[in-house]
Length: 289
Image (cartoon, rainbow, N blue to C red; front, side):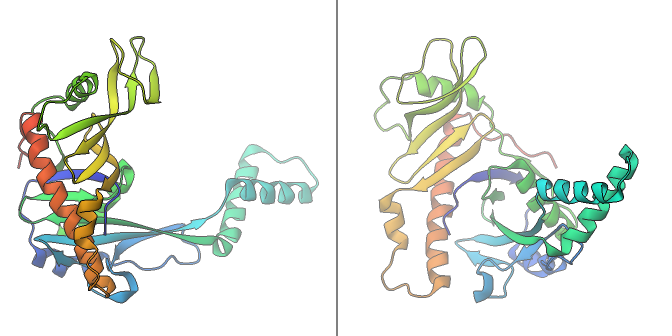
């Protein structure tokens, strides 16, 4: 299980594997009813190959939030609404049209296609970090809210550092020659704000005077690459061939073992990378209890 995005949170209180294992069942996923537009709940990380809601790997507790939604396109609703309005053969006011539209949604919802989305996450039990495989704040908040409901309480804050990440990214992007042994190397792939405040996405050109980097592609040693923004959201995470080879054991035939091996690469690389990122950004800001 390689994570493709990272939103990282610091936990104010220690959470144990046992707590998660005992409580996530209270928020287990149940399929959408015929008239429900969406359902969310925890789902086994191994899907249909296992029934455990929490998987312990490399001192981490891995879990998954499943979101099931009924897809009801707005143009389908609009077309069906117009047909009903025309069938009345008389003028229809705004209030009545809204009521007809609600009726159309009610009638079409049971026929709508179902779409499932799986958001994986883990708690690093050794470092009190919650890591979610998403770049969407709303998707991350859904995971946190369900965790909070299951555990009864969960205080966490987005990864925060003493120094401004945006200034560091801008300085890194403007550096023509990286220091020998530097852990992070900047690529020529970034989003910046120009001197007039305009937002521009570019690739393959040098950073201009007065530009402020919003997102920058970074390469971390021979382990991983990602696009980092000033809010410390990691996008388009990829792992190097040398790191992935550690998980590609030809003896691993079972999906569960392959899942664990690839996840160990993710968790191990993130731990090491965060330690160096803290050094570059003046260390983490403690979470207030």
